[in-house]
Length: 370
Image: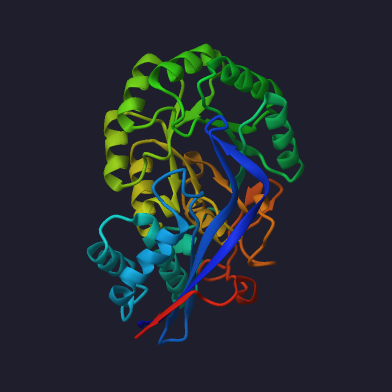
């Protein structure tokens, strides 16, 4: 089997409400999504999505994905998509770095492999749990009552986990936010307090120590792994890493040095499923729990992440973020993994089980063929 054609689609995904990050420092209103369709000489088709969270969040942006695919297309055409590590190697040799640009191609290859073997991707990753994964929302930064209102709306939709955005120079305000949300948290509900690198070392130590009695988990409380390692020394709160978990080397360092207790694995950031499964295995080997998600995007991106999440043993998985309910557009109506009673569950369809409606995507912006 060989890849014979790569079609690239660009679609803007408007957010239903403006979204504030890093204590209100960054604002987002629309996501620039790239969808990739791989066709083969065996008639099998695979889909993958790459949707960075804007271009001001981390070193990744929508046009960069499409430029990267243009660069890598000749290296990928003619390869067997079932041999994902050979495709991975070809992309890495053709374009060092730029992992986020490689993710949609890698994900489309896994989709084809699942269809070729008649298995859901989660089973190819080692076997899917019979139980699904708790669905996580993403709560925009704001006043405590504003954030509580967002959580209430997600609760009404069945969500049982929430990533609440904190961070900023006003440490008193962050302490107030955390205490307010914890006072409203329901039994068995998960709230992760995500700083998105917005705190200095001093600010992190003040806030985390001020709410130490609550036992909450903080995600990315510093800019770098070095920052988090130092914050770790002066605080006792559990720490999750997200933006600084990009490569397998990052995962190994975090595990070896005990920098964090939780991995936030984002498929687009780390380069797709081929690389993400290795990070998953490092986490399990070191007793590190996980959140699994895309960097944002449609139901396809959520479904891709849900497959990896459901391959993680129950005791190691916290939740999987579902971005789809933040959007005004559904690119695959009736398909893919949806939040039902607070749970994201993979079905028995081979591959990813989600194919975008090309009428909704529009015409491809680029097509590459042999």
